[in-house]
Image 1 (tube, rainbow, N blue to C red):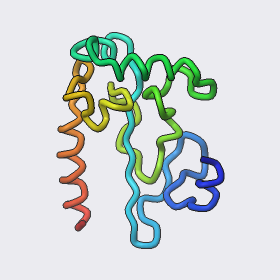
Image 2: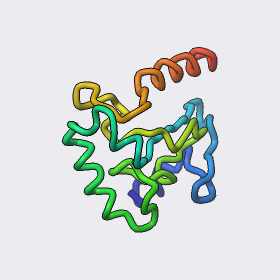
Image 3: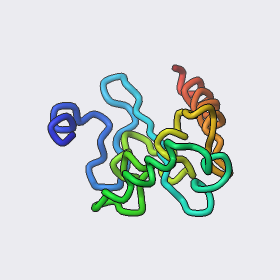
Length: 125
């Protein structure tokens, strides 16, 4: 990942946990991500979602962002361009509404995509 970011730094923040430029060479960069949150991402329909269990197991391997990840990607590692949010109650698979829409309590991934479509439209894209 470090090699990739070195070759393609567009949108990356200059400081860890910060925001990067939203517009680079005509390309807009936005990011949002989730974090595993006790009482939210381990409740609701995620109780019967095997991918949530996998995310919780993978999250135990995080050192730099321990307790601040979606199970696959760290909260601050997800920052690219304008950060829309980095603490949505979503595991890595909930973000794209995987596992037949089985998501944690209060998670609304479809709403995030609808809002982002409106954001892109407002930016003239």
